[in-house]
Image 1 (cartoon, rainbow, N blue to C red):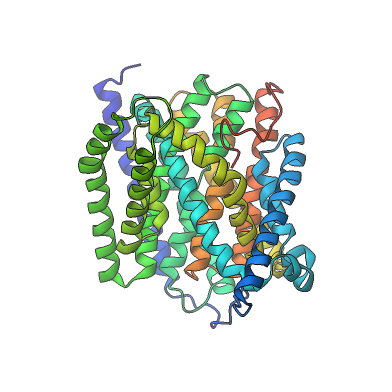
Image 2 (cartoon, rainbow, N blue to C red):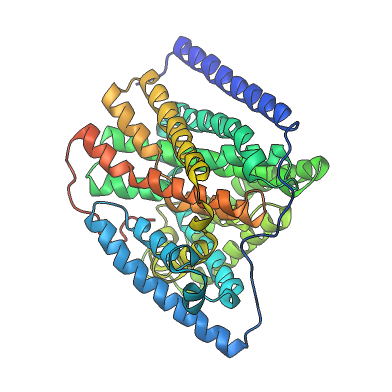
Length: 468
């Protein structure tokens, strides 16, 4: 339905007010937060020891990968049978093999701390390739067709949780942060962490319910894709601030904006012309080599600028036409290796770092519950209100809110970045991982409650749409 000028004007005014109010709220929160004092710095709870011989490390690494892949497959099948995305079981496998459930000594036999650096490198490579395939799946044309509703709903589902997350930082900073971390960096990171939606998990849920081509399904996919792009840009901004002083942060932000502009204005048209050389059929070795060299250079550039390499991988995938032969064929080939081999390494690495035993006592678990409530209220509430204002009925707006509250692997990637940068503590990391699992597991049951039991097929571990 075409947007009339008066309606467009009203939408623009409301959108501008929403953004200005959010910026004002976060600014006030950060101004007050600078008066708070955090706990003194303490030695990290996650240590990395490298002392084994190379052959022993390789032995332990291979055994660890085999254990994680096997456990992930078994638990993935179990959770799929229960109607949950298989990623839940795969994450649970990584946590189950870590020190939280097995204890330090028994866990060290399966995932020794000596293999952590090597497992971390494999995990980073897996995440790079995964974000590349996510970019390949991004339908920019679909976003343009539904820009009005997608932008309004997705940004509302970011603004409210971002403000609530920054506000929650006022309570968490004195209890769970280190004095080495500026409050502004902590608050902005909490805002971003609350704003993430897992586009691949959402797509998988829609596919298994037969909703991909419905009006609600198309809106949900468009909103989730817009949400992811916006959230990753916000994360790049926060990483730039957290990694440098104000002057350095401005240079990082300027470099990021310049790089994005270069990718969209220069690289994207060039890539379109290059990929036409391989219109269909099996990809030649030259096409595969070209794609991987471009991927590594893009990731290297964003890492050099001062933001994470995953942004470069994602952006390169996004500028490659999703209907090209490279996107279709290479995406399927990379996907199999990433899903089966490399992402389990990431889950294992995350499991080693997730010390649920650090969340002990009544107060920590109450804080964990508060994080879950705030995360759900922000995502569900922001989406529901925006959905109603853009014309959805209450039931579909609530269903869309449940879908946008899905977090999955995307949230784990963000949390690992925060832990690597020491913006969040190991205890808060464990709480946020629990939040990601709970909100993701709640999506399918809530959809059944709102829309009825219309699931077309049970969740499977087939990879037509990634379950991660």
